[in-house]
Image (cartoon, rainbow, N blue to C red; front, side, top):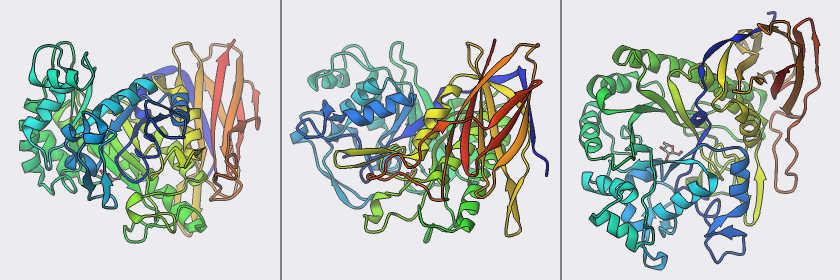
Length: 497
Ligand code: AHR
């Protein structure tokens, strides 16, 4: 099928919330401990116990918001165990993730310090599954109350005089599963109750986030929206991409066959249908679109790397992950009227990580590079882009060959992000630039491509998959003729003169 794109540079379709580029860091495997927190006495270069190299890399991609402490861990976490002198903090079992001992050395103060270093917003997920209303209420008081109160005093005794500013607060996580195995009717009532005591203190206004559905559980969204819309600012959605679709044997992160390349991208594209259908339900109860949809867990989930702890969810990250990231972010852009935040799972050493570490070594994954290339879309205006994507088929199944999205910055610079999902062939297609009112355009580009379907970076070859200048285009009479390499993610920058 013929492929072509028409970009209406003068038709704007709303802002792409920068929080769509958010991240998620859980007390799971080596994400927090080793990936972020090494402690003040570590030989690994750190500031107040937090790795310098990781902070620098995350700042580069302008991480806007960070969700913590879980995940399933959130509904087992008791925040008071993670404050005060570190040596005196309680040790607990991390029952979900490998049964390891959690020493609580990374707690509220350390997390807020990390967010300050990253210059990002904190998104704190409270405990509904095994925590009390009082505990959740007191956490918010501890974090945000400026005045005389038991929790403000406790915070001051723990070394922090001023309250912090916290906007995003989640009331439970996956309460249909690891967060308490609840029915939506029961959770809806609990949500209404717990959120009542999540107070706004002074100028601090909390954005209350209700636990939403697992993938295509549309009934969960229906019940929550029916029973609790007026008590929430956002509701969540979780969806992971498994190559086989089976939790027992998900498929490997590297060394896989073309069949799994294709099925992974096919399953990642399912995000579009999920967001569309959950949004239709939300539209019924919230036609003004006041409530946001937050996809606060998404990404690939493979079998763990051979020889690693199955509870640590450590996996490699290849050019296939870069494609999943690129096409998923394009989908979120398209739905930016409803999708106000998304948090890839997880930042470091867990699932679709942007960074992997091994002791003092650190590498950037292909997914990291996509976040870096796409950061130009943060808070930009979505542009109207008509795409005839062509088809990419494998063993009788078909998916679009190209995924694309475009935006314009406040300064008038246009960016177009393009994914060629085809593992074997370049995608040649014209991009017609309309609405430039005769202005000449100056085009540059960056591309991330693979030399094999599982091309990836390792500690001995950290630059095997790295962005390169993109030059395979020609501009003539307002039409850009593009040749996107096989299995590639490309971002074009178009400046008018
Ligand atoms: O990201 C790993 C886990 O996946 C999270 O803890 C949980 O919320 C989800 O099931």
